[in-house]
Image (cartoon, rainbow, N blue to C red; front, side, top):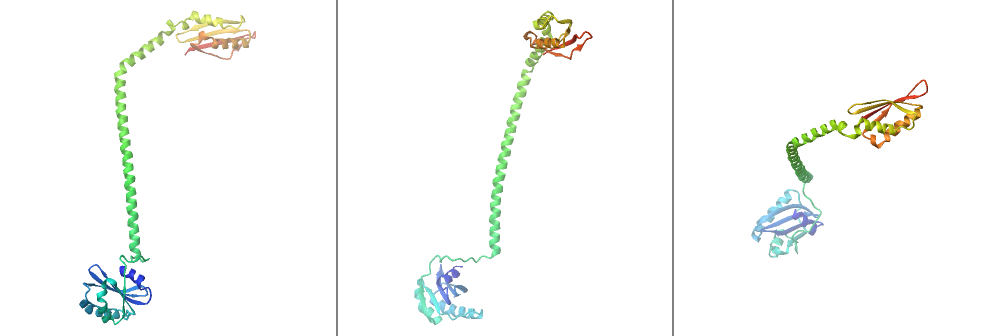
Length: 274
C-alpha cells in the first residue's frame, strides 16, 4: 500500500521505478501513470545483491507484460551510495528524491468491498451488543429495585399484621363496648325518651288544625299518625319536624297524605334512628 501511495505522489505521469528503504529491506516498485504495476522487496539491499536481483526483476516484469524500460528512475536520498550501481544496471539516469515517511496521504483504499461491509457489520454488531448490555443492565437494576420494594412491602405487611394481632383483644373490646352502648342508647339517651319526642313533636305543630292521633315507638324507630285540615298543613308539620334540632337523632320520611271525605289530610311520619 505504501508503494502505491508513493507512486501516486512521486510519479503521477509516465513509467517510473522507485527504489526506497523500508526498515531492513529495500523496496523496488514499478509504476505507470501513478499506479503500481509490480513491487518487490530485497533483504539487505547492497550493491552486490542489486546486481543479481534487478535483472531478474526486469525479466519477470517483461514476462508479465509490463514495460521494463523506464525513463524515470527515482532513488531515495538515503540510498545515495547505490546510485551508480542502479544506473549501471538499468542504463537510465537516476534522480535522487526525498521519499517522505510516512507516505503522503492519498485517497486510496485497497480493501475489498466485501471486507469493508464485513467490518461495518462487525462494528454495528459490537454497537448493538453494547446497547443490549446497557439495556440488560438497566432491566436487571429495575428488577432488583422491584424485588427490593416487594421485600420491603412484605416486611411492612408482616409488621402491620403483628400489630393488628397484638391489638386485636383491645379492638374487640372497643367494638363490643360500642355495640352495647348503641343497644342501650334508646334507654339512656334523653333524645330517645318517648316523652321528650312527643314534646318536640307537639312543639313542631304549625297550628291547632294539625292533630296527632297515634304514636308508636320501638328501640330504633318511631311512627306518628295525624290529621290536618289541609294537605299544606300536613307538609308544614313534616318540614318543622325535620328542622327541629331536638329531633336530629332521627331521619323522618312521610308518604303522600290521604285525603278524607271531609277534605282533611291524613298523614303518617316515620322516623328511623341515625
